[in-house]
Length: 437
Image (cartoon, rainbow, N blue to C red; front, side, top):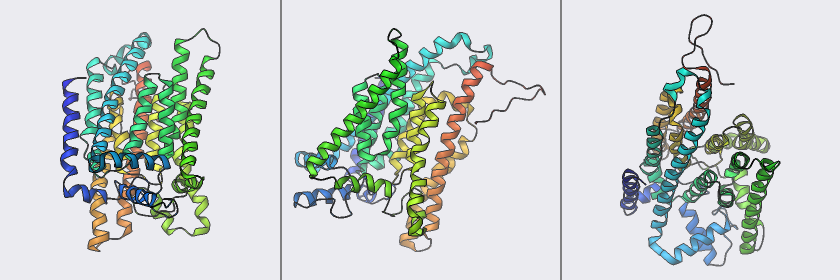
C-alpha cells in the first residue's frame, strides 16, 4: 500500500482511540442516529448480563441481535474487558484496508475492460476515458471517505455493533472481486445473519462471479449457470449452518422472531433517521401488516430489476442494491449511510455526468447535521415536535435516493457517450438530452 494510505488509516485509528476515552463517547452511545435497537451497545451489554444470570435475552424486549453475535461479544468481553474498544478500532481499520484493496482490484478490472472495448469507442470519447491516475486517486478517496468520515468515527466511538455488519459487507465485495467463492458466500451469509438486508447481495454478486467464470472457462458448457447455482447453494448452506448453531446455543427457535422478526415487523417505534417509526406511530393497527409489507418490500424490490438491467456490470448492481437497503431498512443508522457513501468514489469517473449532485449532497449534509439539533429541540428544549425531527429524517432519505438514481443515470450516460460520442447534437442542432428509463 502507498504511504498516503497508511497515513489515512493511522490518522483515522488515532482519532477513534483519542475519542474513546472522552465524555463524547458516552454522549455518542446514546445517539439514536448512531445506535439502533439492533446495533446498540447498551442493549448488547444488557443481553450479556441476562445471559450470565441464566435468563434468555430474548424473554424481554431489549436484545434483538443474533445468538452467535452475543456469544462472540461475551467471549471478547471475557478476554479483553475494558480493552474491548480496540476491537471496534481494529474492525474499522480492516474495513479501511479492504476498501483500499477493493479500489485496487476494481481499478484493474475497469482498466482491463476499457482496453478490451477501446476499439469500439467513439473518437470524441477520449475525454471520458479512465486514466491510471484517476483510479489511483479513487481508491485513496474511498479509504479517506471512510476512515476520516466524522460519521464513521462517531459510529465506532459509539460502539455500534453495526460495524461487524459493515465489515462482512465489505468483505463480500472484496471476495467477489478476488473471485473467492468460499469467502464471498461466508461473508454474505454472515452479513445476512447479522442484519438480514444484505441478502440482496446474493443475486448480483453470484451473477458477477458466474460471469467471470464464463469469461475464463469457455470450454465447459453451461458453466455460467453451474457457477451461479454453486454460489447460491453455498450461501444458503452457510446461512443454515449459522442458524443451526444459534439453535444449539438457545435450545429453541424463539430467536428468529426476536431478531429477523423484529427487523421485519419493526415493532419498536423509537425515533431514528429512517422513515418507519413516524409512519407506524400514526397508523391504525389494523392497517399495520399491509403497510409493513409495503415498506419492507422497497428494501428488497430493486435488486432484481437492477441485476437484470445491469447484467453486464453486476458489481455496480450489488453496490446500488446495498445502498437502497441502507435507505429503506427498518432501523437505519448513519453508519450504514457512510459505508455506501464512501464506496461511491469507486465510480468517480462518472461524476462529470451527474445532474443534481450538488443539491442532493448539500441537502444530505444539512439534514444530517440538523437531525441531532432538532432532536434536542424536541426532547430537551421543548420548542419543537416529532414533525421537525421526521422532516430531517425524510430529507436524508430523499437525498440518498436522489444521489443513488443520479449515479445510475451518470453511469448509463457515460456508457452511451463512449459509444455515441461526447456532446452529441440532435437534428435541430441542439445538444442531445438523456433520460433514465
